[in-house]
Image (cartoon, rainbow, N blue to C red; front, top):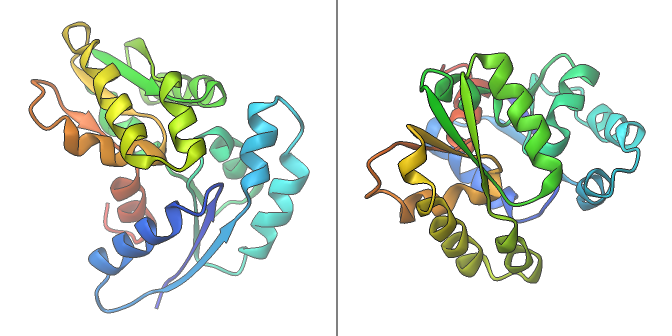
Length: 200
């Protein structure tokens, strides 16, 4: 049985990723979830976080694969732990086939890592979709308002792009509010868990 570790920067991700593993591996897989909210706080403030990140990853080093569900720290995690999967890498690879990719984000610390990853994956043209005004809703725990605001802001950019990526795992439920769009809306959690379980 494969053992899968998850490093989160918000507790809201734990049930969502548990459910994805249960859906994709109904025969069962060992899971371990760690949450360290301070890692995102440090990344957003531009403060050093690699030492703390290394400590958290060391706690999961016994797992066969580790999914780091925070976009802001995913690149550093890949460098520090060989079996780490940054949550947005499979999504970026899927998005790169589209000529113009809209990058929707809600925190500044996500934008640079996401655009760098998309460029590395081969995306030709990126269009920023600034959804930072949604973040206070996430901070206050009002997730429905967070997702509704993200969806509203994404809609304003649809005419400029051929696909949209919701850069952070926290944005994933907003995709359900955008199913009527004429362009695909890509999210990271499902694709990342599939990669971690060896299904893609």
